[in-house]
Image 1 (cartoon, rainbow, N blue to C red):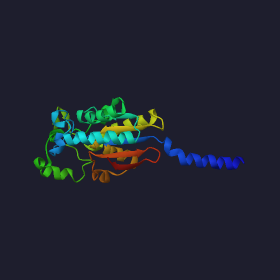
Image 2: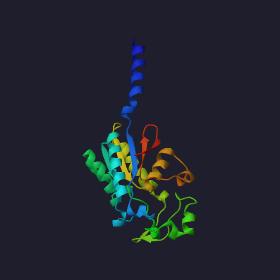
Image 3: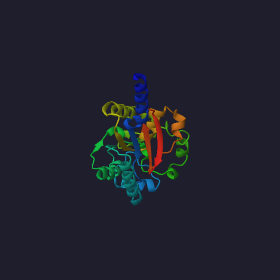
Image 4: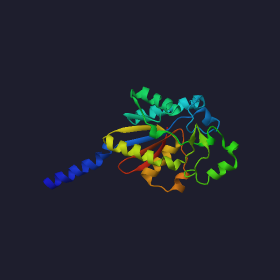
Amino acid sequence: VYKSFSILKESFIKRNLVLFIMKLIFARHSQTFNNAEGRINGKLNDKTTFLTPKGIDEARRLAHFAEKKKVNIVYSSPLHRAMQTSRYVAEKLDLDIKKDDRLVECNFGSWEEKTKEELGEEWKNREKNRYIYQYPGRFKGMKGESYKQLFPKVKSFIDNLLKTYKKDYVILIVSHTGIILNVWKYFEKWNDKIIGEKEVSNHIAYIVDTQSSITEEIPY
């Protein structure tokens, strides 16, 4: 009888474990005016990085998606475009936004606010492996970075989440391309070349099952 009970208990746990696995939902900020013109946002934080009408619609759809996924915590990059996106979610779900500087985008140096057409051959060199490419020059006195250089702060952020929260949390993190590329490096352990080939959309949620470390991409 005891053995039968143990088998039934184990079966019940396996069937219901999915209910108690912490999920992380990473989303890139919604479309900005610079995005619409094909311009690099980077660490820019002026009116050119505000959301377009299309971006506002994307943010509202993200809020609806977050409600369906039962999100109960919202983190955001402090840059305006991410905060503006996060507010639509936070207001719909009646949640506070937790700002974290570790979610800020890469510094694109002298490339800030430029288009690929303006950059010409430089852009083509970057496309050979955009994950490890270090952006030249400076922006507001700060040296350009590579996406790969963001990994230590992304790792620190995720490590902190996994230590801080219980398994039944569903956490939305609104950030940027560079952050999400490093989420794949953290969980999927992909090499630099594969990560450099990935695209990050303004309207796709990247969901991580923290038990299996598998990421799933779902449009919203």
